[in-house]
Image (tube, rainbow, N blue to C red; front, side, top):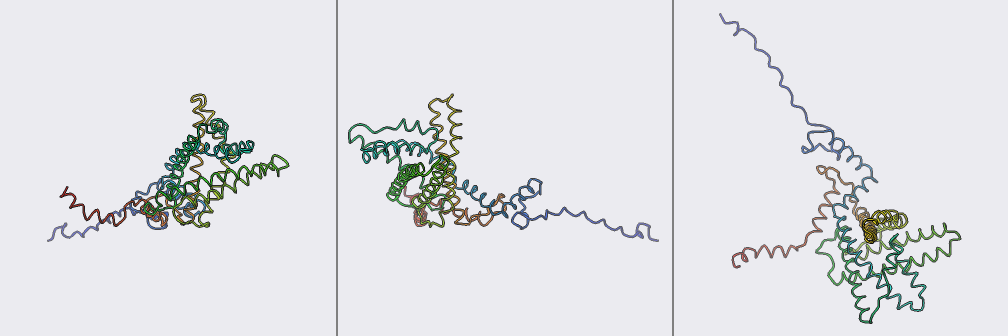
Length: 365
């Protein structure tokens, strides 16, 4: 007789516990979640939700793309470098302007003073100190000529940095940028554009004073005229300083942003500079003027590079950009490709020559 254990029916096996399924919520780009985003934490959910929202909102996506590309191109460092050269070239350039006006308008000292005051009025709070520090060059003709040459050399240093910064923003490869002499000619053209802008601003001030029956009307006319002039100035700078052909359709979005932002900074930014100078005057004394002037030039440089980013992003349709690195957009890949192409500093032929002769040079010494 079989034992009870042998006659006992087999026990049904308990079903195996299923492994927890991976998160099934969509990624910000609508596809499946990347394994790198697991575990599906609350923080990741919030970040992905914000990323998805900004991608779907065109205005927000455009603004974020401009800000992100500003960081990708290291524009903060470029703005600081541009401020450094701009600060050291300011006084020499004003010296050149005073010298030229002294020759051209020898019989009109009142007009000379108006033009100088118009130039330094672009620097709120510290403009009076700048005007007091800049005088007519004295000495022999040779000394004046040498001082003017050195002043132009300092100004060209600032224009060279501006060319490098704008070429980086618009993705011009290093190997395709202009040679030394073309860069100097473009720098001289830039200085001429700025000089013309000073003259036009002086004329706008005179016209506003003549047209405005009241102080408010004259002020409004001057603000509108300054915004239009700044917009045209930024557009011309893009066309002159960038080493590839830019159409007006490409430059106008950034030029409009730059012109309006410069106008706003000119009218309300004095509050910022005033705080910088007044807060530092007790500690630094005369150096407070330097702090205020550097702050002002740095703000101007940042706005110029942001304006360039607006045109670059708009022309290349480089938006939306991704907040999360695991879900890049087509614009993210395009910007990465442009950066790689822009930073290439060795031609393919030179690289092939170097690799072909590397082994021989190693053995022959």
